[in-house]
Image (cartoon, rainbow, N blue to C red; front, side, top):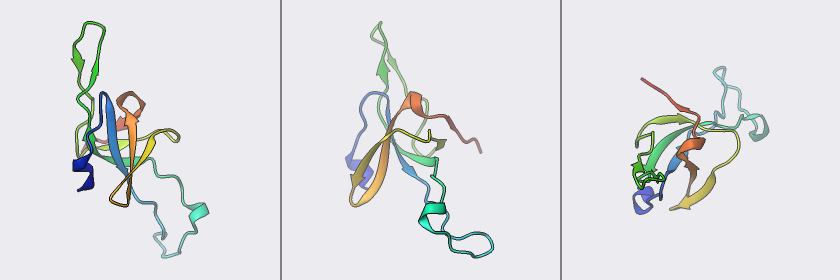
Length: 99
């Protein structure tokens, strides 16, 4: 629970990427080079939101625990207790999965 020690500011969202598939459904081990970049993640912390020109806080559009789709590039890597997390702006997140 290292991310509980880290609070994103403004409209930033801290996510934990899903792990890449290392074995196919047929049981074949995949080398690192052929593993695709994982674009899905779970939101682990969110900032309070951004402030508009009138001084009102615009809340972040995702909540902790939601599954989101990330852009292929971007984000800032954050290491907390030897685990990798990524920090994105709320507007950079492409969408969220609805169950």
